[in-house]
Every structure is written in structure tokens, then in C-alpha cells.
Length: 218
Image (cartoon, rainbow, N blue to C red; front, side, top):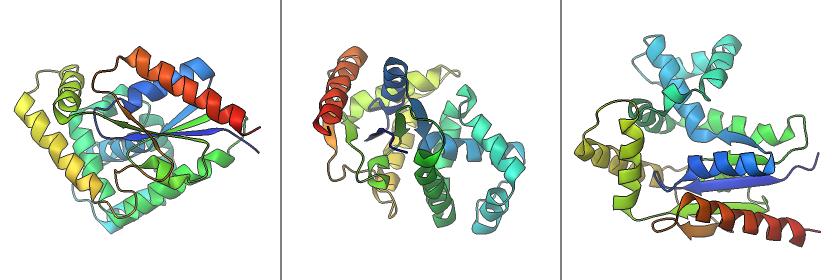
């Protein structure tokens, strides 16, 4: 089945999740988030008191269909957006077994039933779909990105800005070094610096790109 795949990659705080949600609403697309899946695994492990992340623990989760159904349902919950689960997701994704399984899961999704466009969101996600017609890389200066992440963190209670900076700087460094899907622009990615752009401006730009890329295929 020929489905339009749109990849939205970029650094934390550049606006991936916000853009994916707005674009999906505008064009009637499904959204799949690599980060949300990893955060949901971290949440599941916390609920089940799985404090140690190693290959054995991860393998047990991945081979348990009921557990995976719970994780899939958790991925869309606002709870997993909390900073502690984001930090947990970064650590999880450094475990090769976790990264490999999550990436294989994401690659199978375009073959699910239906014909609406699919948006894949996550740092470096465009590398999973090299032939996708639309691949966006969102960027922004560190101060702007970190302040956005801090604003998000405060939605769940008081947050210390210096802690946000430290946490997100660590995530930038670790995810840029990830050997499977490094958080860096890939071949064919259209780079957008969102530092001085509003959400509406970013959305309008990406819609224009989607329209152009889609028309150019026919």
C-alpha cells in the first residue's frame, strides 16, 4: 500500500512533537513517536519496579505481548511527557536491544492498514525511512530549545532551570553519539531553524514543503 510518510526529526525543544500534532490535525495523518515509545517503556518499568535496565529485563518486556500493548497505550498519555521519563528514555535507547526493537517496530508501521499519511517523529527518525518524500530536521539555538523544554517541564510542577539545561545538554550529547540513529541531520533532510519562528510559521512552511514534495512525485 502506497502511503505518504513524513519524517520529523530534530533536537529536543526544536518543536518536533508540537509540529507533528499540528500537521497531523491539518492533513489528517497518524502520528508515531519514537521518543514516546521509549518514554512509555521507562514509565512501564517504573510502575513494575524494574529499576535495572539491561538486556534481560528489556527482552522480557519485548517478548510479553500484554506488556507491549500496555506500553503502546501509554505512549499517547501526557504522563510520559514528564522530564524523568524523557531522561529514562535516553538511557534506555543507549541499550542496543531497546534501540533495535523500537526501531524495528517503527519500520513496520507503514505497512499497517489504512491509507492516510503517516508522520514519524523523533530525533534522527528520517534515517529509518531514506526514501520518504518529506524529511524535516528542526533545529534551534540551545538557549531557546532549553527554555522551551523548561516550560514543558513546569506543566507538571515546579522545575529548576539549571536542572533542565543539564538534563537536555546530556541528552543532546548522548543522542548525537547513538550509533543506530544519531540525532543529526540525515541525507535529504530539509533543515528548519525554529529559533525565531512561531509555531504557525513552522507549520505553514512544512505544509508548503509537503505540498511541493507530494506534487513533484506525480
